[in-house]
Image 1 (cartoon, rainbow, N blue to C red):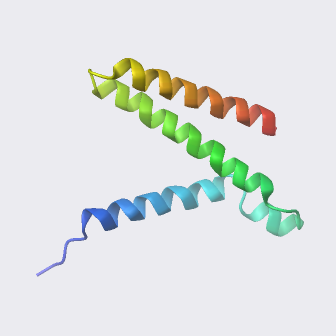
Image 2: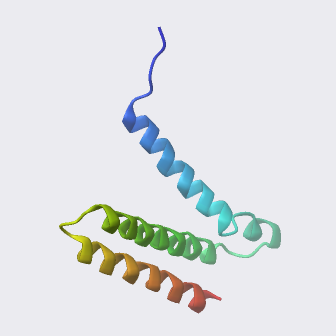
Image 3: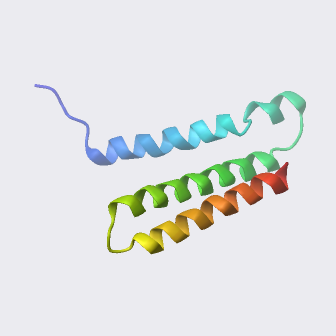
Length: 90
């Protein structure tokens, strides 16, 4: 008899995995090595999560016929906001 993991446990692991991946992607070890503060690390993770949310909304707009325009507008807006924040940070 094998125990199947619950869907909540699997989805929670997925969220933790994405956040840890974004932390590493935005430079988790750079403040530790250089001795600087990690203010830009939090901003980098926020920008990546904002872009991910925009991408999810764009994907959702392709599957939902009722609210397609709403999801597409919000998705493009969040992706554009994320791109703008990337240029401001750089």
